[in-house]
Image (cartoon, rainbow, N blue to C red; front, side, top):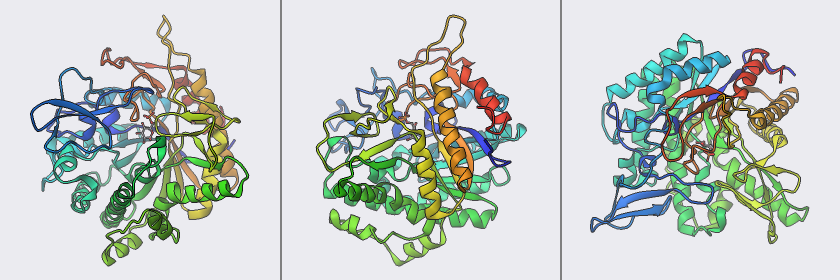
Length: 488
Ligand code: BG6
C-alpha cells in the first residue's frame, strides 16, 4: 500500500450537525433549527405557526402553507440546536483529532453565524471570531482546514422571506458571505469547497416513488443554475484574494450500475450518471453545460433564465479540484422492481451482490474505486474523497469501551480501493471520513446513527453529558495515518 507523501488524511463534519450554539454569539436561525428529529422510518418535519396562530408541521421540501411562518414549537426536539456542542467543545475535539494525527479537518461555516439573516452588509463579528479561533486551534496542531462554505444551511430568513435559491438575489448574498470567508481567513485556510453535495437538488427529485412534476424540475434546475453562478463568482473572487487557494466543487457521489444487461437499462444508467452526477461536475469543473443538458431540460419542459454574463462567469470560475462524498452505489433499471431497498437518501432495486447498512445503504467499496477512475478520466483534476463512513449503532460496554470492528472493516475496504485507484493513476490527494466525531444525522436527525471515531454521550431525546470517548476505530485510524495508509 502506498499513498503519496503529504496525503491529506482526516475527518469531516458540518456546522449544523456538530456545532450547536444555535442562538448564541449573534447567530441567526437556519432551516435545520426548525427541523425535528426523525428516524429511518419516521421523517423529519419542519415546524411553523399558521396564519391563524396554530402550530403545525410539514415534510421537508414541501412549501409552507400560505401566511404561515417557521417557528420553534414546544413539545418537539430539535437536535441541531445543541448538536454535539462543538461550539463549546472545539478545543477538546481538535485535540482529539490531533491525537489521531489528522493532517486535515473538513468543517463548514454556518452562514447565519456570519450573516444572521443573510442580507446584512457587514458580518457578525462574534461569528467571524469564533471561526478564527477554531482555525488558530487547528494551526496549533498543523491541521489544515478544509472549509465548506455552504453545507445545506441557508439562513432561515432567506428561505422564508426571499424565496430561497429560486431567487437570483441569493447569488449576491452568497458571494458576500463567501468573500468574507476568503478575506477574514486568508492565511489560515487554503482549501475551500463552495457547495456541499450540490447535485442533490436534482438527483433526488424522483426518489422514493414521488413523481416530480415539470414545475419541480423547472425550479430545481433554476436553483442549481443560481448556485453554479454563485460558486463560479466565488471561485474567481477567492483566486483574486489569494491565488494559492484550492477551491473545489463537492458532489454527492453515488456510483450507478445498470441492474440488467437490457440495453434499456444500460441507457437509463448512462442518462442517470448525466443527470445525477455529471450535470453539476461538468459545469463546475469544465465551465459549461454538457451537450446532454438540453435533453434533460426538454424532458421536463424546463426553460432556464441564463444570461450571457452567467455563461462567462461559469467559464471563468471553474474549480481547482473535484471533491465528493461516497457512501453507496445504486442500481438503475427500467423493469419492475420486486426487491426494493429504501434507506434515507436513496431508494431502488436491491443489489444481490452487496450487503446493506442498518439504514439501507449499499456497502460497496469497489464502487468507490469505480467512481474515482470514471471521474478522474473525465476531469483530470486532483480529487478528494471528503465524506465516506458508516452510520451504525454503537454499544458502550460497561467499562466505557466501544468495539466498532464493523466500522474499521468498512474503512479498511474503502482505503484498499482508494489505493488501487491511485496505483491506476488517479490523482487522489485527500480523504476525510464522515463524522470523525458522532454528530446529528442530516437525513434522519438521529444521534444513534453514529459515524465517529469519537463517541459523544448524547441521545435522540437530547439527553446526555456530551462527554467524548475513544472508540476502537480511533486507535485504528491513528495507526493508519501514522503509517500513511500502509498499516490497515
Ligand atoms: C451527506 C451529507 O449527504 O451524507 C452529510 O453531506 C450527511 O451532511 C451525510 O450527514 C450522511 O448522511 P446521514 O443522513 O446519515 O447524516
